[in-house]
Length: 259
Image (tube, rainbow, N blue to C red; front, side, top):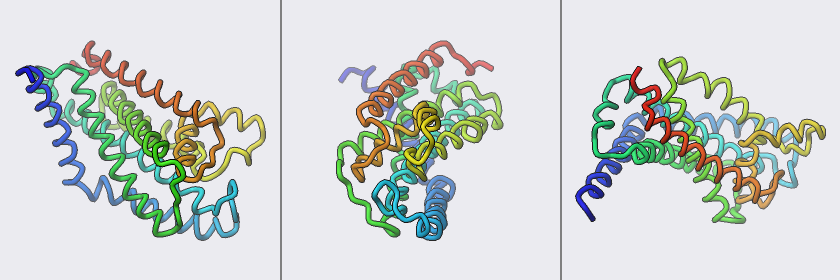
């Protein structure tokens, strides 16, 4: 390995280790809230409301919503980690030190996005354990399950990075999660099958990319999906590549970094 490649690898590892250490250091903010929220969802929606709903898509309601709740935690945490960490680097003015390092911009993007992916998968694992305390969760297609959750974490970690690039204050960091991410997630088939909706609403729901992600993940567990799984993976793959390209271009242009 050349000296340049070694320096880049060390720099990439440093960003990842810093992000991982940050996640563990403030575990009360990064891990516990999602576990508590998932528990509340299972108690309220699963036990109290689910007993009246009965089955959904041929499965017990609590079993049906479990993959959606896991995916919701992955989406929220992958996004939140990257947007808060990279904006913090801008706000605290230590991003300049990274910018003048021998790390190319694409590797900086990978490092911060990797931190978001780590948090998303870590919290997703914790919520999975919470789910198993309430319901049996079989895994029909392990590879599909793993690839779906990994691609989703990558997509929203990169989306969080782009949000952080443009954000000029902490309010702008919270706009997208509050007014875009949360509505799309709740309308993304986490708590219901779109087969319950009128035809026009089903067609409208198909425009929601989170619906495809949640259903691909649910298919991995239960073998049940409201969308074409192949199409879902196509959307996820193209989204990941496109968002990575946009993030690198923004970094190369210095967008939002010189304000």
